[in-house]
Amino acid sequence: MSRHALAGRSELEVFWMQRRSFMRAACAWLAMGGAAGAQAQQRSNIVELTGDVLLNGQPLRPDQTIQSGDTVITGPMSHLIFVLGDSSFQVRQDSHLVVERGASLSVVSTLRLLTGAVVSVWGKGTQRRIVTPTATVGIRGTGTYTEVLPQQNFRSYFCNCYGTVDVNAETEQVSSQSDYHQSFWVEPVAINGRFIFPAKAINHTDEELEFLAKLVEQRTAWQISGKKGSKDSDYY
Image (cartoon, rainbow, N blue to C red; front, side, top):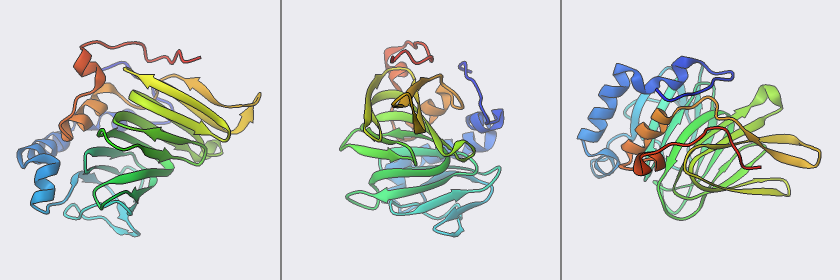
């Protein structure tokens, strides 16, 4: 496993890709044609669902389809992996997110995370956004980890695991280009006139990004280049 640090999350949450249930689900998903096969066959786009998850206020079933425009809420000890268009998402427990609609039901324009955490891999294309209570992040094809901490006045954590993003908070903007994990804290209140600060990589692993990328027939930047760098942000 890659080196990782935990802060308020458990090993079980970041080792989901090692579970036999996920391996079986992922193999079945890919064997049936992945995202393209699910759309062509009008099958569910849920790769794995464990625990209690609500879709638009109702219990989510494994045979249902998540579309842009939907609201997803995961309960304690719950876990959800789904693919929407050319993007894939792993939703941690105790998360509340809105998947805002783009040009069609299978295109996400904005992933609005109100609380909790999401690992995501985004296909290349038109610019989209991840929005938290303290940050707005413009993204293209990239891998990301986003977490909102309600116990810290909804402070946000964002990692540009690979790709190019623009992190915005109030009047401040930081542009990040990363091949291997460049992370930021986005504060709810300015500290010495700033909202955005460099951070260490926490609560997510390389393997999570690699599995999510594989679900949408992609590879991470470090898989393509064959090399990894430092997970300690050196932006500033």
